[in-house]
Length: 92
Image: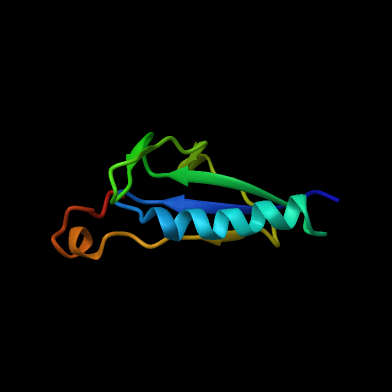
């Protein structure tokens, strides 16, 4: 049976803890438990910077993301002040 894809959609100014915690849970479920999960990281652009300044290189873009029935999407939190100030525009 094919693994369930867990697609993490990453926006600029993503919070690292909001990304790392859930990603670790699915990783451990697949490696130590009975889960069959594959994590995938996607963004609207190539590399993006987290709120904490770490630059991330997602595996794919949203445009190229292909999911099946039963796959899941996880959207980690982003820096609210940046969002509120319009620094994350509608093109993301």
